[in-house]
Length: 640
Image 1: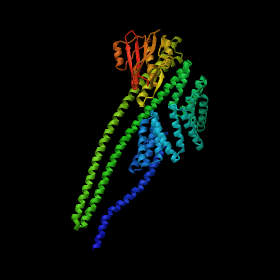
Image 2 (image 1 turned 45 degrees about the vertical axis):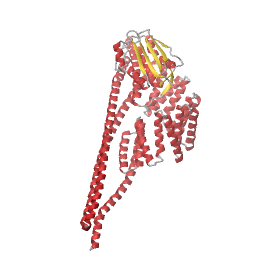
Image 3 (image 1 turned 180 degrees about the vertical axis):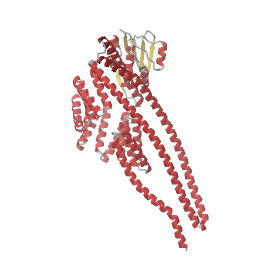
């Protein structure tokens, strides 16, 4: 009889644990299936990223959720790595860098030796784009050692090519050549065609930097031969544009234009907007230097249309990404809610099983009731303590999540304000002149105007073209300063040569108003500034001086220095500014006046100048009196 009760008690006690063991076995089987599913989804997302970014990101969101549920760290790392690559290829470098860091941290924790060097290579490329060359070199060297040990030879060739490009930036040409030749030798040995063509292209860049035209042409031609064989139109465009630049240095302008047009066509086949823009600017500048007004205007119009198309695509793309991030946040919150519900259900089931087990033990073993009751109280106390700890942790996590959501909402609001400001400028100050240009050209082409009327309208069109080009340059400069977030790469520039270049750029409006341009800056004075930004600043100030200087006036450029700053003064004999106008300008408000020949402006130039100078530690000083002309002084920290 006693044995019978012992068997019954064992069955009652053991049955819940038997169910738990069966469930555990099912979980193991499900985990194995999920691992395969995660790996499969990562591959699908990688293949989709080249032609459908949003689908790829949605797949990666599912992949990360699945990997986290079963704690599959390798799959999670691959998902972050692929997601970072998507953001990188679409110009969201900071977001890509953050995701690469997450993937690297995950790989280090799990000692994933194959993933670590690949991720470090991508992070090093980001450091180069941020101008942190020493940090990039350190990461590349770490990856080089790891890839060599692991036998990842093609990655070794890629790293050496990247190190060579850094040495060109540092003007260590001998060291750069050594890296490129090593990469070429490895690529030839392994028949790694991408590495070979990249090495030849980089050797061409090196030869160009050394003004070795013959070797530069030889290496670019070697590289383009691989591009033709691989049908790589992007690579063809890169090489053709470099070869066109070489022809320009030999004053073979017609040949340079022909080759640059081929580069443009190849870039257009791959929708490479940056390459298309570079090729069009190169062609436009050659026609402009030859005073070929018709071709200059045609290519300038094409450039404006391309930039507008690119801007429209980027706005659509950015909006899609913002929507995706918002959807992702909602999905993540919903997933967390479901996980919390599931955890509560599991906790309830565990409590029910344990409670039922103890009730059965109490009924079956009345003799040891006091002992069992004591053990039950101890176990329940420990579980209650753990559950309270979990509740406190969840409350803290929820508070942190709410703070993060509020912070991201503020960023999204700021992005919307920036987008609205840009769209306002583009839709009004760029779109209206382009529409007006189309109307004027249509009237002339249809022969609806007399020769005298056509001449007047063409003169208006020329003025409008110059204004629109200036505004476009300003807009692009402002976008660069506001969006990229990069640290400025300052370089030494001879102020005398820079002003001579400004003189050539403004030659047509100067001749139109018969204004004398006098450059009395010292020909040995060097200032330190970001090259593109300082050109935008001086271009705006000189254009402004021309606008408010009457016929037969003069503009004088001079410079001075003190212990801490360099000063460049732009003095004009124009109409000057009253105290009220000067106060508005100094308040950095959108304010515009018509010039001495009724020239119009956007009210954006001086605001941009001050903004770009402040980013370089400088300032804009203005002295003016009505009827006595103006002096605009650019103050820059002294070159060290």
